[in-house]
Every structure is written in C-alpha cells, then in structure tokens.
Amino acid sequence: AAFDMVIRNGRIATASDTFHADIGIRGGKIVALAQRLGPGLDEIDAAGRWVLPGGIDAHCHLDQPTGDASVMADDFLTGTRSAACGGTTTVIPFAAQQKGGTLEDAVADYHRRASGKACIDYAFHLIVADATPHTVQKELPDLIRRGYTSFKIYMTYESLKLDDRQILDVLALARSEGAMTMVHAENSDCIAWLTDYLLERGMKAPRYHGTSRPAVAEREATHRAISLAEFLDTPVLIVHVSGAEAADQIRQAQTRGLRVYAETCPQYLFLTAADLDRHGFEGAKCICSPPPRDAGSQQAIWDGLDNGTFQVFSSDHAPFRYEDAQGKKVAGEEADFSRIPNGIPGLETRLPLLFSEGVLKGRIDIHKFVALTSTGPARIYGLYPRKGSISVGADADIVIWDTGLRRTIHNDALHHNVDYTPYEGRRVTAWPAVTLLRGKRVFDNGAFLGQAGDGQFLPCEKPALAQPRPGRAGRSPWLE
Ligand code: URP
Ligand code: ZN
Ligand code: ZN
Ligand code: ZN
Image (cartoon, rainbow, N blue to C red):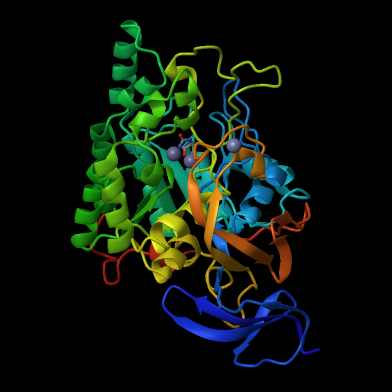
C-alpha cells in the first residue's frame, strides 16, 4: 500500500480553506492531499464529517507543584489521556520555577514528570517566578535556544508574582531573544485588600472569590502589562481574559497597531458568577482566576472570538479534586474562598463545547474554530507548520468530528482524574469520533486507544509573532 492510513471523503477545514479530499498518511506525516488516493494499510471513511487539525491546548497545568498543601489530580498520563478523548493532540503545560529555585531545575523536573507518561505531544511554557539576574540573563537565553520559547509571568499570587521592574526585565529579554511573554493580569494589591475586607466581615463562601477579584482589577493589570510591553516595543500575550473590560484594553492596543495577543477559555463563555453561588459548597467547583463574570461578559468574549481580538482558546485546565476518597472536601469543610485552590478542569470538554455552542450555533465559523484551537496557538508558540494545520508535511494530528449528537456531559464519562466537571449536565452536539496522533488512533468510537509514553516532546521555534513590529527596531533608542 502507498500509505499507512488514508482518511477518505472528509470535509477538511483549515484556518482558511474548506475542501473535500482524501488524506494520505505515511510515517506519522501527512504526505498527500488529493482526490481518490491509492490504498492505505488502514482506512477511515469520513464522508459527511468534518476533518480538522488536532487541537492544541496551549494553556494547561499538569502535575504542577502548588506551593501549598493542594495537589494536582492530573499527571501527564491522565491529563493527556483526557485531552486526546476530547480531540486535543498537543498540550503546552507549564514548567514552573520555584521562588529560590532555578528554571533549569524546573525544566529537568517536568521532563521527568512527562516522559514515559504523556500520551500526546507536548511542549513547555516556562513560568518565571523568580526573575533574578541569573534566571533572566543566563537561564532564559539558554532555554529559549533549546526550544522553550514562551514564558508566563504573574502579576498576582504571592508565590509567583513579579513587580513592574521585574516584568520589564523579562520583557526586555523576550524582546532581545525573540520569545513570547504571557501575562496573568490581575492587580494583586486590590485583590489582597478586598480579600481581607471580605474575610474580616465573615464573607467567606465560594461566591466571594468572584467578589474579591473584580473586573477593574483585571482591567488595570491588563492595561499595565500592555503599557510595559509598549514601553519596550515588544509583543505580549494576555492569558485567560474574562470579559469586556480587559478585552477592550486589548482591542484598543491592537487597533493602535501594537502586537498584543490574547487568550480566553471555556469558563468565560459557559460559566458566570452565579455558578460560584451553587448550593452548599458546590460553587467551589467553579473557582478560577480571573473569575467567571456575567452574561454581558460572556457575550463580549464571543464577540472577541469572532472579531479577532483573541488568537488562542485554551482550557487553563487546573485539576484539583473536590472531595477525597473519604468524601471530605479537599479544601477543608466550608473553607473560606481564599483557601480553595484556583482552577477548574477542562482539557476534554474544551473543543466539544466550542464546536457545539460556537460553530453549530453560528457564533463562529469553522475556520475561526480551527484558528483559535489549533493554528493560532501553533503559530504564536512556534510549533507551526509541524502542528496546527492539515497540509502536506505536517504531523498527521487529525480529528474527525461527529456532529448532530444529543449528548450530556457527565464527569463519569470523562478521562481525567478530577472528581467533577463544572459542566456536569450541559448538552453538547459535537464530539470527536476519531482522534489521530501522528497517524495513530488515540481515540476512536468512545474508547481511549493511546499509550503512555507515545507523546513526544516538541521543542518550539522562536515565534515570528514574538518579533517587534517590522521597521520598529531602533525606535526605542535605549534598546538598540
Ligand atoms: O485559576 C486559575 N486560572 N488557575 C490556574 C493558574 C493560572 O493562573 O492560570
Ligand atoms: Zn493564570
Ligand atoms: Zn493557568
Ligand atoms: Zn453525571
């Protein structure tokens, strides 16, 4: 046979095109796109179904030490298994530096955590939590050259946050080395002040997590992050944007021609503050930062997905269990909101939710779906064109979609190791029928078929989108 695998008669969509063709796969790569290809050792008939590039989840937390007593429920096996079953073939989790530790140690540690376990391909973003001269001037340049070309910095969380001066140091280094800086933008002091205020008055239920992190705190930090990046004339990417306030800052900067990029997540489309007020302590299942807001914010995020404000749609999967094996709340019975770990699971439900509510309800078109969930993240983080498209020479990471389904999300049917999904009981109308990783079935007809250790580490290239704007070099005289 000419091919290891042929996918026949599918309706293929990329970020820009739709076409009917057979896909010929050999050696894990797409080697032919044409009508009526010759035989393959294995064949899939995709007639009448969408055939899309595998999802890239460019923001998820797997097996990440937290700095307090909480423990992440998903390691690289259960996390990537869950991702594959939801149509994702590449994840980009974080290798997080500890304060007082080095990035090199973090990277070595995360490779140990991932290798032999990951079932799909993975790259790493770095988290720069201790911006010492050694880390910024020595470690970052070395690591960027070795394929870690993006890093996240935090403006909030005691154990992670950088001050403005440190943020400038990191942005300047990103500029000179051509790396992408991602920013968690929330004003730390506003949140700490309001948290104390609420707790002193006995307001400790999960819903007050939302109260303690208002949109103005996110808007201010987003504006500041953009300003610091503009000051150094370097690109920046704002992660997990929750609503209109921050999105407007980003949109205005983009309109002024700045290279400001943005990511949003399912929780800002499908949850609101009311979900943090679910009966009993259940609201704890929807605690994440920034918090879900209101219906108007959800609409603003849909608008931003459609109008190009956002380039990346990720899960921000942060897997913490709700109860332990004895049925005790992991955060502590009736723990105050400030002690509940931030983050919700979402690797497996990210694509089905966006396909169902976005594409099939006409809020975004199929090309936007591919751009946001695969091509955009691949380009922005230096994985394109190996990942992120259906084209000759690319890895054969492909998802064949079933649509027109009537399915209800139940945690029992998901493949992660978290004991809940915030989307329990929600209807979806689309789910992957088959997920291929480099030509191999990792999910087919409801069954996980992947193998621990089959996922490969992906060194990332310096993203073209991380370069300062054309013709701008030299406009900041103190830099050149
Ligand atoms: O609440 C969240 N988002 N937790 C995950 C860590 C982060 O800040 O992305
Ligand atoms: Zn964050
Ligand atoms: Zn995150
Ligand atoms: Zn259920």
